[in-house]
Length: 395
Image (cartoon, rainbow, N blue to C red; front, side):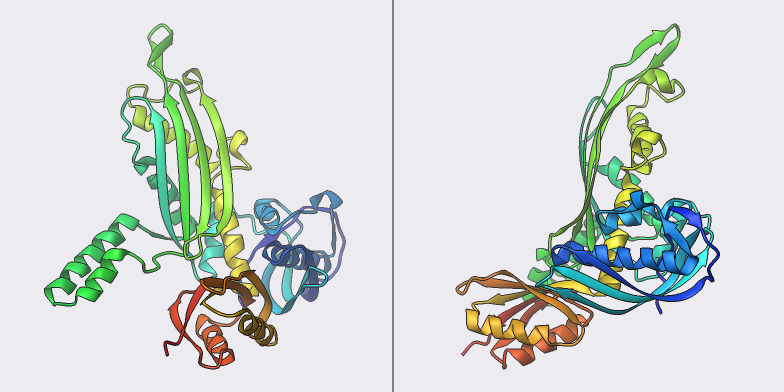
């Protein structure tokens, strides 16, 4: 059993049932992308209800797993300590996903702040690799607009959360050095590969766009000098190998009046912006309680947990495959153990066709299953955790 998730809920009653291990079923409706998250959330919610003997507020019904996971830090009468997925299935005809799990439920609350709880969750599983990419458009003196300020803050916060943080510029410098070494050794092909930067370096990329304005120095009271600052931040978490957006958080443009923070250094605009950015990104003020960087981190972890427990959502790309062969392959994959569903995303006989599967198979096992069911007509071109690409065997 993988100990993954401290799962907290808001309840109306506390009934005296025995806590312990329970077996429950959760269901979610919709397309496969969201139904499986709904089903997992429903199963965990049912586990707490059954294991701790409580009744959940009807108002606490959620629309998706991300919202459910956002409730992790609320106080409650019960939580899931550990859980194990027993089975799962997606019914195309009903558009319904079903998850069966066994969970260990405890009463009470572990009393952790949001940063420590997030860090604990990440440490209990394989941590996702993250790269931060930022663009700043802040008008005013003292700003280069290269995104360094926002990137430093997000990297620091993500590292405290427990994510593995990688620096894209450092990776490029390493690859350039290795490419130069390959050139000296006469291996032009390796040199070109290293300089192309096509190898996977992260699981998620956090993209931040910051717009803002730093006002001129003013003196609202005698001998009191301040600056106003306006800032807005858009955050996205993207799966690096597929480009799929995993989560978005928008912090609307907010006007920070200098008079409300007269102790801040008006003569250091860079530090002023840093202070207000940290306030917004950390959610330390009520206005940013529900939209902040930790909210984005929770959503990344929610996606990551779903991938680990219910299986990865993997894209299979086939170059120049005919429709009959593709249909036969999909039918064979649907019957393969540990594959929950198979979904055709795109068909193009002359170019690329894309099939999406949810599977608990490793990339190597899935690759073997595809090659076996294409009767040696295809070979693997590239393979990552969430994307496999196949080309026809050259005659």
